Image 1: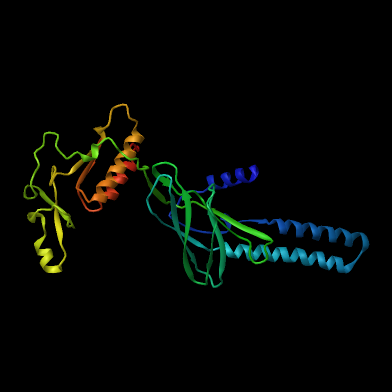
Image 2: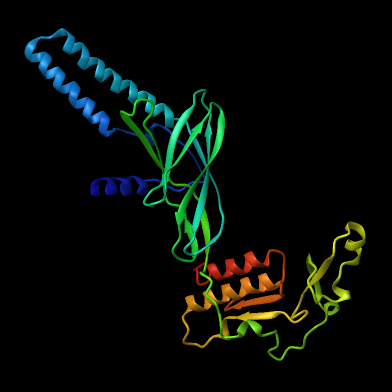
Length: 315
């Protein structure tokens, strides 16, 4: 088992990451399965017996078994040869959850293929797929996350042992794909989430700020914020959002809301929870961390959580 792990690590280190791979003979490896080794031993034993007793039928049987193994080598190789793999996308998740990396497999040949795939070094399940001639499928591979940040996709291991289960063809591929992992939300009972932008700044009215985008109407929006033209044209109640200091009393989720002794990960987790609370309550908010800020804008939730997830990364 240790030898297999070292061999896998050595093979993976030799692979440069790429957004797309086409499997050629240089990247396809072939080894007998357990059943294949057993059958090879049986063929050897029959051949030794044929030598000792000069039995022609035993010679024929041993050579037939060897021929079957050689045919299995060719057919297993054909299952992987010429296959094209392309990196997809991975949905962002919170640390501790399972993300799924998607890979597109293209079969340019005129025969069907039956494959199995898993992420090297992971304990996730193996995904099986079958490709018809001249077709494509998407393979989704799960991977458990443990910490925030950008998670690079591990090497992909593809294998097959069809049609007889005697020879196993396998290949390792490194695709350039990353998953964004958000901090684990931690409930903040300190009361900071009730704070409204202040810090000596005067609350501005909607008309004093620069228009940012349209968003769904929320209880408490003033008539000046309602997009009347959109309402008349589409019969949909929407409100204007404005970029500026603190339009409408936005909550400020600030890094410095917490004592200096609090560690960075704890702050990030509590800020993530406060972002989710503001989204749940549909309350305007502004996230501030050292060196960056996310204010009201389209897809603010994703922008804010991504900022927390990548906090502290070196450029």
